[in-house]
Length: 111
Length: 204
Image (cartoon, rainbow over all chains, first blue to last red):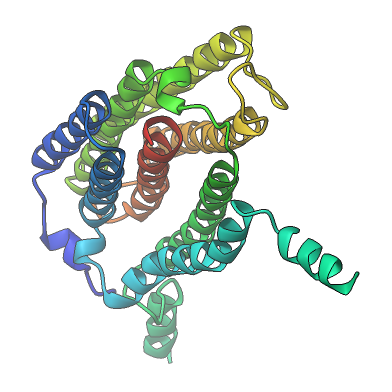
């Protein structure tokens, strides 16, 4: 006989999650419209988005009531994306500075 | 002998990783791969935007009131999806059908609004390879990412339609609700991805 999952025993208050998601979405729009410093807007928006994504995954997708292996599968792409961004950072930092300047200096010195 | 046979049959559809169905495990693995695809697209978008000095402010060009409403629609459709699952778990296929219809309606309206938004933006000059506001790849990244998500919504509406028809045909019950749960996972994932797209493409 198959074992029943915890999700069958737990019934989250879906309407409460809905109101949280709606409130966070309104918070995002307000954060964009308010004359706040850019860095603060970025932190607020990323924080709101991650909170909303966590609520959807934990309660609508029932990850909160699942076993650890499914959680590991769900978190893996997040870790890989963070790794991908970290690997892109060197390219981003060289993008804003002209990469040919040191080469020109070397050529001038050789002459 | 028959006891051994029935034992093996009972466990044939179960994953050794979790007590859930293979379908649920398979959907999670698929979604993890799909999430990586969206993650790569958003990371690429970030890299291109950071490297461009003329990238326009998306909120000024794209507008956020319509997309905020589209976000609201997808959140509502996620609620109707969990209500559909709850209904079939309680053995109420008619109620499940109604909630699935509402979920599909939410997805269909979302797609209609996205088509309207694309049409409006194309008429204001946003092209795949250029636009009047600067950042030549702004349009490219916008159309690829929102289009890729829109394809997922389209697939989700079709998928839910099939699940609904099978539900009407009596395939699901309080004891056999797993396919509805698996379809729900996909739909919630589409909602989750839109939350990220809305923030990173429209708001930031």
